[in-house]
Amino acid sequence: MGSRYRGSKSEARALSAVINLVRAGESVMGRLNGQFAGLAITQSQFSVLDAIFHLGPLSQRELGEKIFRTSGNVTMVVDNLERGGMVRRERDPGDRRRVAVRLTAKGKNTIRELLPRRVAAIRDEMAALSAAEQDELRRLCRKLGRQGG
Amino acid sequence: MGSRYRGSKSEARALSAVINLVRAGESVMGRLNGQFAGLAITQSQFSVLDAIFHLGPLSQRELGEKIFRTSGNVTMVVDNLERGGMVRRERDPGDRRRVAVRLTAKGKNTIRELLPRRVAAIRDEMAALSAAEQDELRRLCRKLGRQGG
DNA sequence: ATTAAATAGTTTGATGTTAAGGTAAAATGG
DNA sequence: CCATTTTACCTTAACATCAAACTATTTAAT
Image (cartoon, rainbow over all chains, first blue to last red; front, side):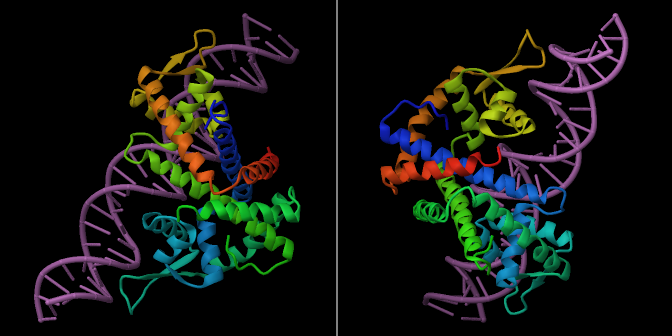
């Protein structure tokens, strides 16, 4: 997405907004994920632990919905978390297609330790904006996100 | 990043803003990349073609700067573009460490065809916001993006 | 000139990601 | 009950991504 497109004013405005939107998201997340450097955890893994921590055991389908990823992807992320001893898979006896993903003690400790740090880092990141600006950003982003589904 | 964190008001506000920011960026880009479905081109490849198209031949280091990716990543993306006949690598005779990445005729045709479509799609995406809102979104995102680097 | 440091690019290993296709189980409709 | 469809998960192939280690080349320091 170059910044040199010569078109209508409205196109230039939309282009610039999108570029900055995507860049802001990437750079904020990039800095937040710097927290995990060295720790044996990734952003996707954090998202999964976080979801289970707050919502209780979930099936992989539900996890995919929560973190907006495909089922194939959830399979791999849960694989890696399971290998690290963070979660346990439990086949649902009632519906044997389903697999409940549950936190282990280690997983619970990990997310309990990481969450406050993550929240603090987010607070710091957003400190660049006033409270009103944060609310406005949220409002605008919601309008955009809802768009296609 | 769950939405059930019980903390201070300022933390909840920051959290919600970040979640919606990242989600908006991902969902907008996801829909935009739907354009490429079926075409033999990915978002990263598009970014590289776009950068060279607008700025002229670039070294891989410069490309990495433009698209905010590591040099190892640029190597692979350029590999794939080169394999597809979109770009050509040319070793710089003055500094034999450098490689200039240049558009081929095919690459030039491709990006010339894709760019207007992409711009139109972006305009449509952003039509959910008024001009003033787009400008405000841009302003807020710039503030955030600048933060750490 | 010799050595040390910096730079450009590549490679490797691990993880993530999707799309497309496959298997098993459950639900649905005769 | 049986066939069909749907659902949940897994697998594969291709691409993306980073961090770290590596090669080749250039620049800087002595």
